[in-house]
Image (cartoon, rainbow, N blue to C red):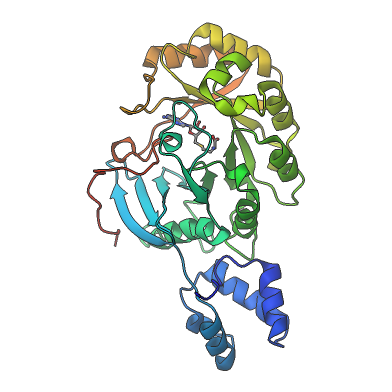
Length: 362
Ligand code: SAH
């Protein structure tokens, strides 16, 4: 039997563990800070714990992040991480540097059961839900490997490249609710990773009961809804989940979701050449969303041989965006990042003959 992992344990679990050992309650907060704020890799490094407690913990528990099996570096600086999990399943996380911030895209499931027609993750099938420590470990690994460079002078305590986290990797986060929310809680906690809720975005197709629950959590991330069609009929053809959680109810639930700081709900719309990318589609989308506290993020399809769709032309993307803007809908276009290493949206999957891994940045 393997020992339980300290990494991933919630405040409550740590409090129980400390109480069980007859230790004072503040020890739980100390361990929590070492795990998620300082992010040490071994119990021995928890300097303010008495030595006997450290030894006892090291004996009873392990402290472990998921194992990085491969790293791939894109020409644009995007870096993809392949983790090999216990039991052999693999997942991916992506580090995306930008001018004024750094984004980490994380996975919540190994594979995905949703089978959206344009997404490689679904084509590869579904293995299992991730546990909270496997979700947190992706963030911890990427953050550890990308400390703010000493060559960028900045004022004390001010991060010139604040972290953003997007739950947009493999899997459907709201089909793995407990582990995902447990991980998000620790990520957003000031005593934990300290990523402000407005810098964290969860993307979902709109699993309605889970979305309702998320809306009632005390700490909530931003919400992005994968809509991808301007009407239920076309959405059903692209996304089988439409049968279960239909278009109108998903939009309605999303608009009721309390975004941090009164921000807007994002609707993601992957543009498939000749399928859902005409001005007529844009007008219909605007009609359905118009006047609401919503914005649309257009994602030109990242094509792949296994995906039976074409990318839209740049002209179609422009015209679609223009039509939305003219109708008064706030719109942005997502720039593809890391396409050459299959790290862009919808490209995360087990790749045979993937590009050669590169060593970690030093
Ligand atoms: N299951 C969640 C999380 C995945 S997020 C969700 O569906 O929202 C990944 C985003 O990339 C989703 O909006 C997804 O629809 C989109 N996507 C999937 N395949 C894509 C592709 N080939 N090109 C561009 N975007 C894609």
